[in-house]
Each structure stands twice: as C-alpha cells, then as structure tokens.
Length: 409
Image (cartoon, rainbow, N blue to C red; front, side, top):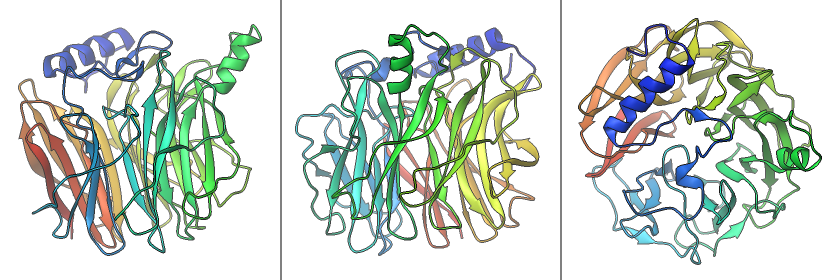
C-alpha cells in the first residue's frame, strides 16, 4: 500500500517499517513507551554510519557543518563557496562524550553576533532513553571552542534530548529540548495519565556563558521528534513540535518565545487528527512568512498519510488547507523562506534508493516547481536547509559525502 492512499495506524506502521527496513534505516513509528529509541537508549553502537549533521552560515557567509566522522568524533568543516569546496575536517574535544548523530537527533551549530557561536548535541546516557544536552561555546566565530558543558540545570538521569538551538535577532541564545522530568514525577506519584514528555528551554544573553532557569514551554510533547525553530517577528524565536493532544492525537503545537520571559502559550498548529499511540520519529519544519509562517510536517489526515505544506498565522494557528508534497514517499522535509521565495527539501525511498528532491516557490508558496537534486542507494541523513540573507542552500549527507545545492536565488 502506498502512503498516499488511505490507511489505518497498523497499515501505516507496517508500510513505514517495510519501506525503511528495506532502506536499512530505523523504523520511525513505534509504540510509545516501548524500546523505540534504539539510537538513543545509551552509548550508541558503531554498526552503521552516523551521518546526521547540522548546518549554518556564519555572519561572513561561510557555510559550516558539524557531524561525526568515521571514528564517531565530532568535527566541523566550512566552505567559502557554498559547498563546492571544503576546509579540512577539524575534530573537536568532547571530553569523551558519546554524541547522538542519527535521524531526528543531530548535532547543531548556530552563529550569533560579536563572534559568538555554539555547537549543541544530545549525549545519550547509560540508562535507557536518557540523555543530556551539551554545548560547546565559541567567542571567536568558531576558530576555537570551549570544553562541552550541560545546558540545563536539571541533572536527573532522565530524558533531556532532541535539542534545538538558535540566536534571535537581538542576540539572545535559545536552547530547547524534550524533557521528561514531569512525566517521571507523575509516574513517581502513582499517576499514569501524563501523555508523552514536555518541551523545556532556557536563554542566554551572553552567548552561552551564563543561562537563565529551565523553563517549561508545554506539557505533553511527543517523545522523540525534532523541534523546529524560526525567527519570530517580535525578535524572539518561534517553535513548532509534534504534540500529543488528548487522548492520543499526534498533531503539532506552536509557541512564540521572546527573550528570557517565563511565560509562553502553546497553540494547536495542525489539525490532522492523527490518532496513533506511537512515536513517529518525524519532526516538522518552520520558516517565517510575510504574515505568519510556512510549515511542513508529516501526519495522517482523513486517512491519507504524507508530508504536508501549510501556512500558519502569526500566533501559530492553521491558515487555509495544507497541501501534500508532490511525492507520496516524502519524509523528513525542511523549509526556509527568503522574501517571496519558499524552499522545501526532503528525501523519499522509491523502492531501490533514496531520492533527494526540492519544491521551490517564488510567490510566497502559492505555486511551486519540483527539482530533482540527487539519489543514493546507501545510508543517508535527512536533508537540511541553511540560509544566509536571500540565499538558501540544501544539504544532504550520504555515505559518499555532503552534497550542497543552491535553491534560492
């Protein structure tokens, strides 16, 4: 059965499992609470390449990536010509940390003002499904980095994973992650009604030298889907994540996060109504629009499973009807915007290999053109987008290396 046709939860999981097992990658939809975090249950195995990367442009326009090499060491490389040539890999000191770099959990790199830069990653711990968010800080634009340190104040051996990091327009550094302190407290109190996990965050106004308190954004997030961040018009960041709405609908929630303010208000951003007691391992993408946001996400809507593109209002509520991407096998889409241009990239398994594709709009998402970017029959990461001003590039790491394609202009 193809994913673009109507299917129930069991059929969807069976199709996803068969598709991805054939491709040699983990099954993304598995029962919540089961052993569904193979790559994050403890120190990660070395049985296959860990290809997940983070990518960002520096203020000067250099494209940087961060990931793991064949020896599972954290490295950076940079390119002054949008990926046509790269500097030699530079291995960073992680003080012996194991680094999660697979699927939805990838290292990240972000640049701020005054030479500030940070790298974050999730460090899996020995206890199953636990981890902590680690950061390396730079004050010289990435020429040197500090030793790694833990970002959050809570030090319990529980879930602190799937980090997201960004500097806002005012230079405040925002770090968000999935956190299970409230779920653990509920379980310890004998309650069994806590759905999923929670989204927590903190903020730093000095580039990661000091941090404010851990602050809860929302209860009941999904347990293992990436968090998407985008610039917010008021100067902070906007966050989009998969959420568990009562009783078990795994749609998406949105919150605007401004400065170091404690208060946030999450709203429902998608209305697929996908009732599934499972973790899809499939997070969303978010980008600013002229009035609101562009968003991409995976879900099942009216019996049709697939990746959709839609618009959100400035407060994060859905606007208009979403559209399926023009690829029934699309997965792990990302989105960026520059003026009237919107760029979406994804990969999809065609039965023999992964195809890397893009959908590009020059009229704020009213119409799109489809582009074929690449193909790989081996292991590969999820495609990523990076942006510098009006330029948007797509990156895809396979076993052969990192490919970069300019989508805008």
